[in-house]
Figure (tube, rainbow, N blue to C red):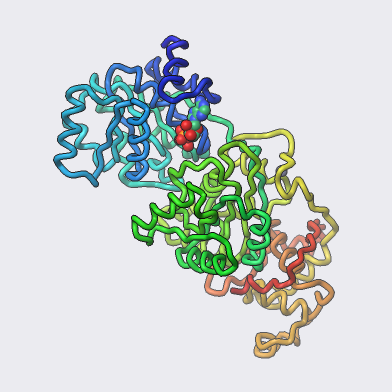
Length: 514
Ligand code: ADP
Ligand code: ZN
C-alpha cells in the first residue's frame, strides 16, 4: 500500500498527522497479507492498526472483541468519523441482527465487531474470500497462561482453518513471553510477525508503601491533589464502598464502582468521572477497561493486584496524555495471603501462584522497580529509571546476620507453629495473652530482640522471607517455618545482609495481624 495513502487516510478519518511507533509497520505488514501479533501497552494505539486497513481493504474486516460495552463505543466512534461499522452480540434483537446481515450483504459495512460467542452467526454467511482481515482484540484472553482467560476465546483457533487466506491480526496489552507464544499457537498463526512496543511509560512514577494506616496515607496523598482525577483500586466491592464513604466524610468527591452496581448507575459514574464531576473512583478491577480519559493523574492500589499484568494495566490508565502521573501501591501481607487463597482455588493454580510470587517480589524490591516490571514483560533497560521510590531513595545494606540468627532461632524454638506477629511478640518479650497461655516467656529466645521495634522486626522478617531463609506456611494461621537455607545461617555462619528500614511517620504496625 502506498505510504501517501496511509497518511491521507490517517488524517482524513482519525485526524492525526503522524503514526505512533510501530503503527505504520504493523499496517504495512497487514497489507502484505501476513499474520501479526501486536503487543502494545494500553493507550498505545492498537485500534488504528486494524481500523485504518479496514477502511482501505476491499472486503469486510472482522473484529473479535470480548467486551460488549466497549464494542458499542468503538462502533459509535467509527460511525461518527465516517467509517461504516456495526457490531453483533448476544444483547441484540433478531430484527437488529437481520438489518446488519443485510448491510453486510450489500457491502455497506467496513468493520464488523463480533463477540466470540456470536461468531457462529457470522460463519453462516461469510466465506474465506469475503473477509479481508480478522482482528482479535484482547488476544491474551485465549491463553490460560494469560491473566484474563475467557473460555469463549478458545474456539477462535478455528478461524484460521475457516478463513485460510485471510490475515489475522492479534492484539493485546498484556503478554509475557509464555502467553505470547501460546496466543500464536492457539490461534494457529505460528508464523505471525511479532510487534512488541516498548512498555516503558516514563511519565508514571512508581511507589510502593507498607499497607499500614492506609486511609491516613491516602488522605495525605489526596490533600494536595484536590483538582486531579484518580482511581483507587480495591480487591473487594465492600472495600470500594467503605473507602468511598469515608473519603466523602472527609470532603473528597469520591464514588464507589464495581460490577454489583446497577448498570445505569455505573455508566453515570463513568460519565461523571470522565467529565471531571467526580474526581476519585474507588473501584474493583471492573473499572477502567475501555475508559478513555487521558488526564488521570494518579492510580492507587489499596490492595495488591494478583499479578504484574493486572498491576501494569491498571497503573497504565494514568497519564495517557504523557504528563507526569503518580502511582502508589500498598503492600500488605494479609493481602498476599488472601490472594494466595484465591489462587489456590483456581483452575490454573500453579501459574497463578507463580504470578502472585512475581507480584510480591516487585512489591518488596530493593532495586529499581521499573527494571523489574519491564523485565517481567521481557524488556530490559540499562539504566535505573530515576522515577521510582527505590531510585529516589535507595536502601542501604548492613550486616544483619545477628538479627537473622535471632529470628530464625526464635522460629525454631516456637517449633514453627506461630505466624509473624507472634514471632515478633516473643522476640520483643511482649507480655500478652498468647505468651502467657503458651508459656513462651520460658523460651530462651523470649525477649532477645527487645532493642528492635515491632515495625523493624516486621520489615526484617519480610526481607528474610524474600531471601529464602523463612517460609510462610499458608495454612490456617500462616505460621513461619525454617528452610534448608536457614541452616546455613544458624549452623554455618552464613552472613546475611539486610536493607535499612526507612523511618516512617506512622508507628502502628499491627495491621498485619488482621
Ligand atoms: P489501545 O487500544 O492500544 O489501548 P487506542 O487505540 O484506544 O489504544 O488509542 C489510544 C489513544 O491514542 C486514542 O485516543 C487514539 O485516538 C490515540 N491515537 C492512536 N493513534 C494515534 C496517532 N497516530 N496519533 C495520535 N493519537 C493517536
Ligand atoms: Zn527506578
